[in-house]
Length: 453
Image (cartoon, rainbow, N blue to C red; front, side, top):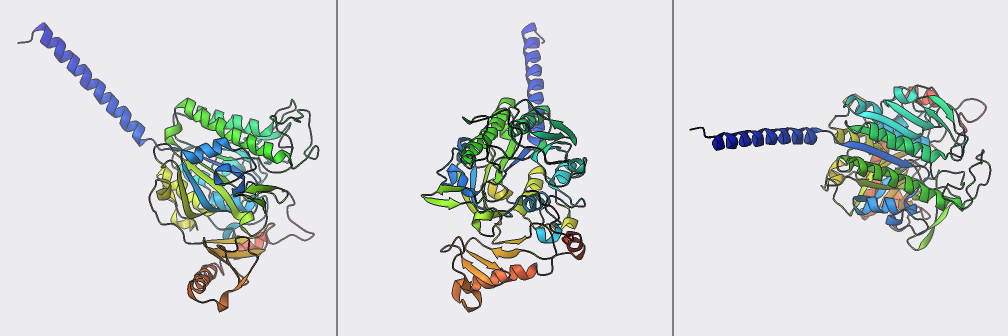
């Protein structure tokens, strides 16, 4: 018998069931949404500059917080200079196989911008470009939107900066600060694309020289018009603090938008700190080594943070190379790297999630600044040893800055076995330089192909 109370009860039950069904559907949609990815790269910023790593000269509270609530890596290595690292990072391929010249990425290259765009991501890049001057190059390389310094020209980057927005030049003359302008774009990008998965590549312009005051410095001059004025290494500390502040500003925006738990954030440096900078690191002076082949040039900070996915407070000692980011991002995005690319990198997503994974036992480095058929230096390196193509061999556990070369051919035991293994890595890449790439990379007559820094 359908009494009024029974009808009301059934009505409430039906409404509850419908609400539960909606909640489940919404939950499934949320679970199925791909994670957002933000890759931040500081310019000329070595491992020793982060307080969480043992740095003692600078204030990096926001990076330290990311490390404390995420994962900090102790052995991340990149190329010793900006464009070479950018080429490896974006393509997952060692320079020996695709590097042409300073300030240029081969237009034929496939980047992580392409692959994540194909996986359904909104893609954006803001910061330092330095990969070619054609207006549509960022879009050509897979980025829907771009907001860049040193794209079509080379204006000031700090006070009263010049920026290219999707290839359109814009000059700022009212005391605007370049790093803040770029950060504003980053905040706007994640806000506008909060309803869909997004990938933001944020190669910062800090902390590269010229070492000039920031808006937070006591001697900030909003009327400064040139990168040749008021330069002083003392400003590096303020530049580091401002860079860290911009990272914190972006994290705060993600929190405000409710995106933090579904966003993987990764931070690294593009090469070692400038040799003009000597910092205190773990109780000792540490001179930057940008452009050099030792750890001072290649060892950079790497911090990853993804609340609820990356275990908090972990320190990871696995080797990470700059070619490893592309396959990692693709795995995060749920897409495969095309086999035809024949990348050199390998995904470290399992390590990010707290699993053992399959860590690389060594990495290979081939470096030449301005392009050419042969390398300025070339080596294979593990966490403990390093072997150069010319036969120089170093025990990094005792000689981290390579002051006492060993005769690899005369070594026995564990060191001898390691030298042999690293020789095998070098042999693997002995003929890896493609003839067409070497031809395009040959230095032009009359000097260097590109003198920009």
